[in-house]
Length: 111
Length: 113
Image (cartoon, rainbow over all chains, first blue to last red; front, side, top):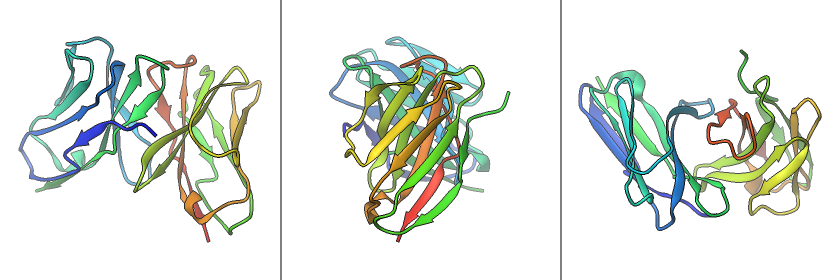
């Protein structure tokens, strides 16, 4: 199936550091969503973006909908141990309206 | 408000058997989507139901089917199980069909031996 290119695949960072991850595609999207998944649980929605250029924050998290509508990034500032998990981007395609997911970024935080 | 619930949480089956998974959406949500999650393929869309009708379908074989009841609860069925069907099956609910904000359940982990 169609996938977004999400990078990096994994990160192992020191507590307190900032984190950045992104998703890119050759397709155009109407919506970008960022989810976090903890072990044994389903993904939890962190941030939803609905128009090109939109920049939205949720606490220490900030995400942006790329101007080209083909990419999005998520930043986490001052990481803490509970930020550990898998972060997924998801985009709703302009054509067909399906929601497609990135492969995920595994975040590990060293305290 | 209770979240999305899925039953069972864990299941072990053998090849050739069939399985039925259940999903109860958030109260008031009418759309239910199903996904298969595996380490190698990530999250793959199976199908979406809204008002008891399948609205969208992913690229899975006919062995995977689903349905939705009048109370918006949904079931998915996999017949003639294969080893490769071992995965976490996630259900997500939203207010309306193709609604951007989907809320996921905890998933059903299926192991096929």
